[in-house]
Image (cartoon, rainbow, N blue to C red; front, side):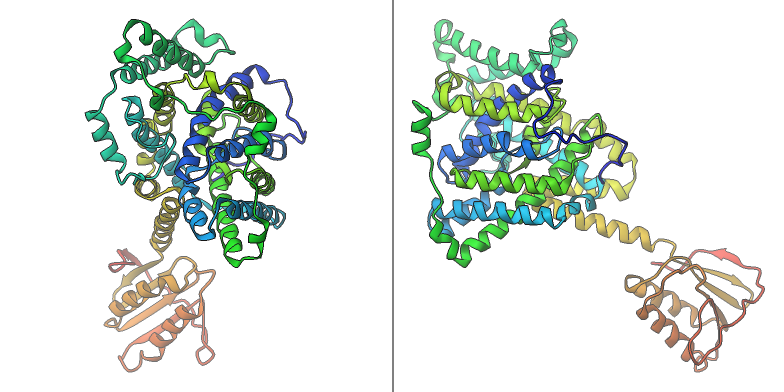
Amino acid sequence: MQAPYNGAVQSRQFFPSLATIRQDLPAGLVVFLVALPLCLGIALASGAPPIAGLVAGICGGLIVPLISRSALSVSGPAAGLTAIVVAAIADLGSFNAFLTAVVLAGLIQIVLGALKAGGIGALVPSSVIKGMLAAIGLILILKQLPHAVGYDVESFGADAFVAPTGENTFSLITHGLAHIELGAVIISIVCLAILIIWPKTPMAKVSWLPAPLFVVLAGVGLNTAFATLAPELTLGSSHLVALPAFDSASTLWAELPSPNWEAATSSATWGVAVTVALVASIETLLCVEAVDSLDPQRRLTPTNRELIAQGVGNAVSGLLGGLPITSVIVRSSANLASGAKSRLSAIIHGVFLLAAVLFAATYLALIPLACLAAILLVVGYRLIHPAIIRQAYTQGAQQFVPFVVTVSAIMFTDLLRGVIIGLLVGLASVLRQKMHHTFTVTEHDDLAVLHINKDVSFIHEATLVSVLRELTERPKVEIDVVGAGFMDHDIRERIRSFVQTAEERGQEVILVGMSFDEEPKAKRPKVQAVLRKAPSGA
């Protein structure tokens, strides 16, 4: 659940303060380095032009943070929408028609925000949120292992269990170990070592040079050195960041796909728009809940405003030829881990994305995917740190079971399905807890007293029937409902039926705390009760 409000004041400025730029600038640069291959990889996995992923990332960095008041979340194209995008492009017949659906989805999100639908994220239990973060961490680790050894057959940033090639997360690791690129292994090991020892070195005090940025420089330096000293270790272009290059802004503008507005008259387009709007909104709300829970300052995101910000971002992204965007936990976690203090870091990452597309494609194409994999391995480890698992375990089965189920479900399905499964298990756990000790029975001589200790509804009916069945052999029964503030119709009818058939059983039944029209409320007899366990299932 969302952390309680602790007095932190949300900024009302359109553009964030520059007071934290010393922390936000390097953090934004790190997020940019992580986001760049993710944007391209998600576009390729979605069957969209590569530029569509970059446009979505730029809109997520330059549009959303200006409206949103989320301090640390970063928006961009989400791997969780990949399957929806692939199916939607096929159903609508073209990517241009899909762009129309993206624009409409953005408008729907704006309406949802205006209708104050943002509160739905607060209904997700903390055990499911923690499970979601741990699952993302586990997926990051497992998905980056092949890239760390140079097996780059799957798009960087993919998170589906089954890859488009037909392989799954585990088979990719197995095959990767059989196709190791020694140069990639050396780069990833060196980069991991830097990330691990960095906090213990004096360099950790240099705020403008975070460890991930130094790792990228080290990765480029190592691969450049390989070309001279050990050519057989040099990584080829398939193991490096691939970025489309444009001569100028006008060339880029000419390459952008545009919406096919005729598709707006099709019911299929509106169906896709509603689907994208709902899924993107839910994923965004889950992400900001998770990021808020990780924020050291415990700042809260205004969720209705966040939906409006995401809606504007999606509308602009669709207009410019980009994929749909959401708040994304991977980029947000990297942002937080890099020491970001405000939403300025998200804007900076967007500026770098735009500058990279226009001016730096040649230089960014030197970055090995292995060094980026090392960064995400560390981010993943922090999300699924053993201490987090131990904490969930020590909180008892009611917290640990939904946590484990959420992790497993997300791992083998996707983020949205996994969270829904976790929610259902969490709900079942809550219902089980709610039914615990609802009914207790005490006995004294020939009198059995049934106490109803909590509010009761139809979900307690089966247990009540079991308890009453065990009381049918007692000569005298008292039913005390004083502890039940609420009793629905089904429960009352079960008690009424038990009372009405008492004479046939030769049994006396006394009601305390309730009465039926044909029966006056009885007075509570003075009984020295002896507590015993309720019947099985009570």
